Amino acid sequence: MSATTTKKFRDSALVSGLISQDQIEKMVAALRKKTIKQYIDDETLAEAFVKSKELTRYQADQLLKGLTKLTLGAYVITDWIGQGGMGQVFKAEHNFMGREVAVKVLPLQRSTPESITRFMREIRMQAQLDHPCLVRAYDAGQDGNVHFLVTEYIPGTDLRRLIRANGHLNQYQAAAIIARAARGLGYAHQEGMIHRDVKPGNILVTPDGKAKVSDLGLADFMNDSSEDSKIGKIVGTIDYIAPEQIKNPHGITETCDLYALGCTFYYALTGKVPFPGGSVKEKARRHCEDTPWHPHRFNPDIDRELVDLVAEMMEKDPLKRIQSASEIVSRLEPWTHDTRPMQMLSSSDSPWLPPPPSYASVDADMGETLGGSDEFDFSGGESNSQISQATERSLFSEEETTSIDRSTSNLNAPSLLPITPRKTRRERQLMLALLIGIPAAALFSSLLTYIAVATAN
Image (tube, rainbow, N blue to C red):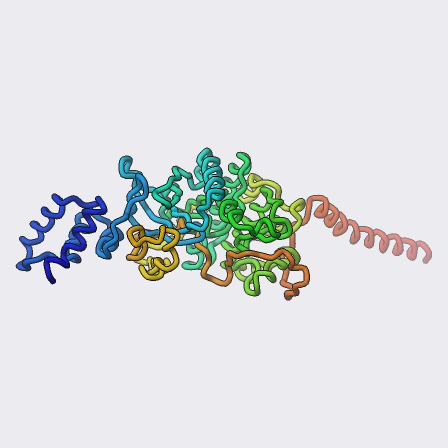
């Protein structure tokens, strides 16, 4: 390898500001003591900086490609986390404070003056929220033509990936996660904010089983930046959308979040979305008209009281649905004291995480997002991160994020075995009275007949 080619990594490292000339000279000198080679090649030098922890693996991979832009404002990018509807997501550190954060780079198509104004408004509102069950928003900024959001970094994975890797949760684990999500949503609702896109991918789970709700309020930014909401269409994750959200995209209330949380609870307990298969329109119709398969079909170990709770959370009529997140928390309380640890995967088991996209694919998909410059492409390279703060646009059939036309009344889909909804207190009292009263009346009538016959004889 020639001396000219070995300078590519060094030049990129110097331009990036991550490595100084003095660091390079000291590292080269140290390496030359261990080899008879005249030149230290790029890969050897990069690997040495990774081993010394002066660079992360991700940073070294980017510099080896000749990419030099590894900062966003005051944040130094250290790893690639994922890619989703909100754009690319990275792990980063504040260059002064050293705090680890997650940075979401917004797609360029969402960066019109109007949408950015709305986005900043949502972030200012979100930044005022402080709850242990919500992912905190720390900062938002602009670097050139790139807008980004900085949030709390959550080690772990999201609920969707956790279940896809390990199967459905047991009822205690699911109850604990949903209860924490409900606490976070309840706090947000009290502060006047509605999530609008509650789903497993937006519930982050830490290695010790704690849950936090992410992307609060950002669905409005993602949806309304297009013309969809003005022409009778909605944009969202069809497997978790409340019927009234389908019928009236402008009539969003807190109970829409509770319905979506019910669908998420169903997924956590069964490993299945409530209405799998079929087109988006068919799923929309089923949300409005059908009931899903009974959870015991997929997980017979669920207590009946939890099945009833899921049914009440997924009531199609919002007036009959559970009306507050606090009620969900209260109803889940008997199942949230299980002390068994959540089954998480170690770093050695990371193949269940989707690999980072290749340089070429991200350059094609995200070039406009990042201004079309390969000097600002953080893509590619193996990620050491185990979290999913990306809020992915789904790649799987059972979870679709798309526009939905509201004209679904002429669609037909097979009826599904229903969850038997929990009866209201009055209905239960009436049923109990009938169960006791009818046999008692029959017995009393038979007794009178017997007495009459005996008297006659």
